[in-house]
Image (tube, rainbow, N blue to C red):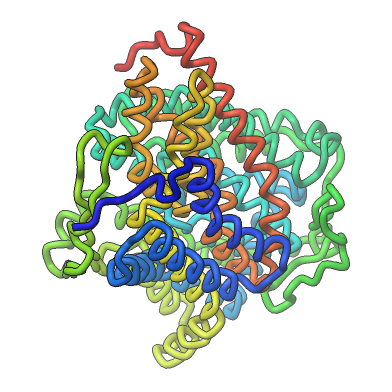
Length: 563
């Protein structure tokens, strides 16, 4: 058994700097060297292997097995989701039903800002609540590019919108996992998160429109933005505090969509915003190429949106209705309990399983790390999406042969994205087993009375490293609990802040950026997306940290009773 070492160089500062190199390398190559994401990910993975083996003294066999486990985790379930969502999307584009769906949304409102609220925030939150793991960005990014948004707008804004719902994603998986890791009550943890995120459920819609249309453009539609945010934030608070963490996003997103749709029946902005590009000047407006093959609509087309019969509109929406229904069923624990016993092979990596030991102060006592890959292919969200795509394909009258051909074409289109995601998850998993990530986490834990602020940033770092709020909670949940006890702070508050801060890291984690670039067919521009969203991520994470500081040191914020 090998025990992790958190200060291999004998200097906390030097060890922390070396531990940060893989992340700096990955983001730097993508954002500033403008290297293609799959090459950047492979180079960063090689650097991480070197640091883990040479600096942190991890046995080489364990290091390569950890990277292999991460690559498998990247392909299943995350790559599996992307492949099948893009497959469904391409079928609807080829069939022409996506153009009708696009027209039906434009028929609700031709204003791009309101379309963002409906699709990126409210509709995306439903997919986050039902499935998570990259599904909302893949779906909303594809829809936005089809509606005519520029690739950077579709990609970046989908990522910004997919923040406030993340802590309750996949039917509350991050909160439930956090409870299991820390031994704290998941109901209490979910309730505490539910006293933090509603503030940001109000802020994020305004932030989203400001990032797209600027301050003046946001003020022109503030009533609709307020309706959308309040209709999401209130159910988010009520369900999380008076029911539990499981259905928070599903209920809140449905209420938000219904309220916004109803409000738009009686209210219209005085100025219709038809520009598909970002107002802020970070892209070259109309000179940014848009892939015509994806059915993008120009502003002129939107101004004269064709009218379709009700039956055609229903047929166009049917693949996405089928997707919503199947994904929701696939996410329920009842379905998993029924189906997993049928086929759920688990492969133990003998050279790694229980051979790596986490030690204090990261955990209360020495704890071995398991290494078992569960291939629950039947209950993976991607499998549900594939089933929905096949059903939809037959509904759209595709032949079995054409479906097979289209699937092969999709696999070829997303090949580099799958390589990138596998390499990035290999990197993230390797940092967890080698203790590199814990070294970074311990640096945050040394901030004394400022720790509540940095506790949120620790969650942000965890998601940026792993691509998952769930994984971040597994990674740093115990560290948050231990540090809270040492500083005399609320364990529930500090552990919850890990999840809440983590949601703001979702927009800059490399796998989400790759999902966004794949969904919008903007391959090779991951650096542009990262540069656009990075400062939004930092700013929002800092605001979470300020809120947690208030909760930690101003009593009324934490005096609320959990029911």
